[in-house]
Amino acid sequence: MRGRRAGFSLLEVMIALAVIAIALVAVVRTQGQGIRLTREARFTSRAVFMARQALAAAQADPELEPGVKDGRFDEPLDDMAWEREVTPMPGLPDLYRVRVWVHPHGSPPRQGLSLLGFSYREHP
Image (cartoon, rainbow, N blue to C red; front, side):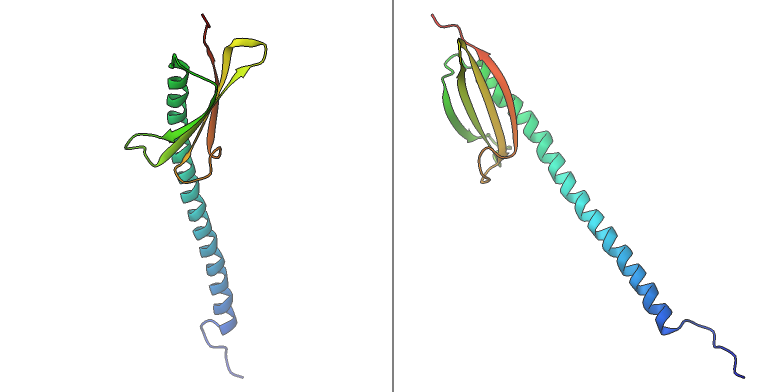
């Protein structure tokens, strides 16, 4: 009777490689999700800051009028765009609803982050 040789069989090696491949795929997917989430967090933190700035500018504008207005931020934030919609509140002629959207320049408007605020303007 011959003794069994020391070492791994081909089947054992293939199973080990399959387990390693599955683990590597999981690591790569997790890394990809981490990068995507980091990018989203960066956009959100910048967009909140810029939307607050745009909303405050609209609320402080003495000539604020109903309608839609859009534009881009100044450098170094010129890769971002904004859109502002001002609507009068029904039954309250001195109160305006101001909604600001911030999105990457070139993406469809009204996607991204939006903030809602109100502005009071006393009519003479």
